[in-house]
Length: 376
Ligand SMILES: Cc1cc2nc3c(=O)[nH]c(=O)nc-3n(C[C@H](O)[C@H](O)[C@H](O)COP(=O)(O)OP(=O)(O)OC[C@H]3O[C@@H](n4cnc5c(N)ncnc54)[C@H](O)[C@@H]3O)c2cc1C
Image 1 (cartoon, protein in one colour):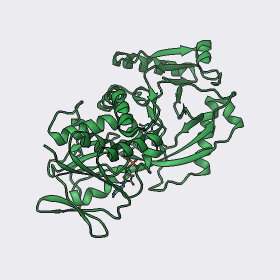
Image 2 (image 1 turned 180 degrees about the vertical axis):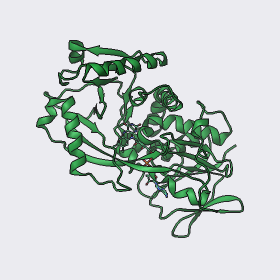
Image 3 (image 1 turned 120 degrees about the vertical axis):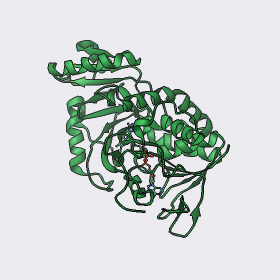
Image 4 (image 1 turned 45 degrees about the vertical axis):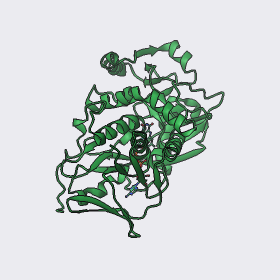
């Protein structure tokens, strides 16, 4: 049965949930306080890298990431068809670099536990590695190759999601001023500073790093915090040829189809400040020239920053609230919101439709941090 759904926040998560709910026949409105895709989502490097981003083991978060990678092929093609826009989907594979013999053991441990999950990881050393990546530093001792890891161009992806939503009949309302929630008659109601009210059958909270602002109204502890990521891009050239995503313990580089090399990213605590600092970019430059010595002689042509929505335990908040089942949380995706957008969209829409999500989301229950200390 068609429901009226209000999605709060027009980043990759809110737009993906809106797209999925709309194509299932629901009437969807997205409320965004700024421009669509203008925060973390538009700043992302666009890596779809469950293996490289999860080195420790096959925990529920890794499984969520992996499920999302599996969904990506059909998802990205559906978004492209629905929007008429391209946003790349480059199957370059990835290399996770190690500098010392001692790190090889850690790479081998990763390879062993990741192998059953289908990506055929392989450790590549010596001349074979430098044939794959000729500009890579000769200090790199070996790398773990994952052929299935891919990337998209995040700024274009969010534009395509916005267009797909519009074409699909989603109402997109930007520049909403001071959206506030209150509970009356046992249900949540939304109001903006102009006194406009927004009523729906279901509300999806997906306003990223700002999601903690609902904790008082919902009577729920929502420990979501902004972690700033500073990031920069260089022009690729003959001296700097990069064909894979390359990770090292302190950073990564991603070659884009537009001839740029995106190098990221810092993890700073700076409140809601999205400015770029000289120190932050300098640190990235120092890491990256260790990976690609040609970067020593180059300056980034673009520098920017975004706020990742981090949670207290590193896992997203995904599911409905038992006390307010009209509210579904879909937030706290920290470093992997671009990767996790398809699985989050499917899971949130399944919760709304009373269906079983594609993967077990019990571990991501949004009420796991308990009640807010502020009474409602
Ligand atoms: C530098 C950097 C690199 C990254 N690289 C990758 C990567 O390679 N791969 C990957 O998977 N992930 C990556 N990420 C992480 C990814 O960008 C985030 O996890 C993802 O964008 C979170 O999406 P979101 O929609 O929750 O948040 P956002 O994109 O921040 O969207 C939240 C939206 O909510 C709006 N909003 C806030 N409060 C309100 C309110 N009260 N009312 C209405 N609207 C509101 C905001 O204006 C914003 O538009 C990266 C992040 C950064 C910063």
